[in-house]
Length: 142
Image (cartoon, rainbow, N blue to C red):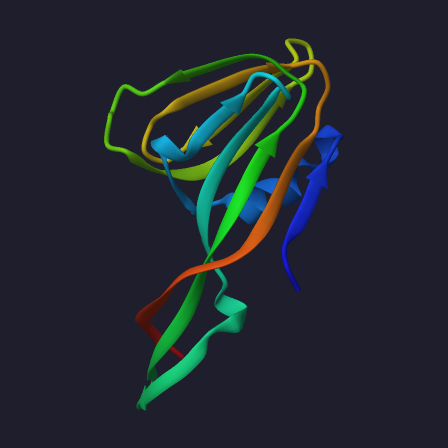
């Protein structure tokens, strides 16, 4: 079943964070649509529940895990500030933080890039595009 999560209250943010945590995005895939006041970030998401076992070797298994394209959307944006001090190009999501007193959403990452948006109301969505990007092959210990 395709992933489609919407948070319009701060207590729904953990489900968004769970969906994006440890997923990777490229800075060039951050797009702010001023006309519709929406910030979009395309990112790669592994889908381990759809993995296929390729080989068994004792307690090790070689598995193929599909990687799909998803989009994080933040709506109702008044201002958007992105500061890229590291300039590495590729960043991993850690979590989203919402400060209702400042009406500000901060996107926290492992590799630092500062993404802060001020919003008129809280609405964040994560959606699968249906586009498979690759199959990642790795060894796992069972």
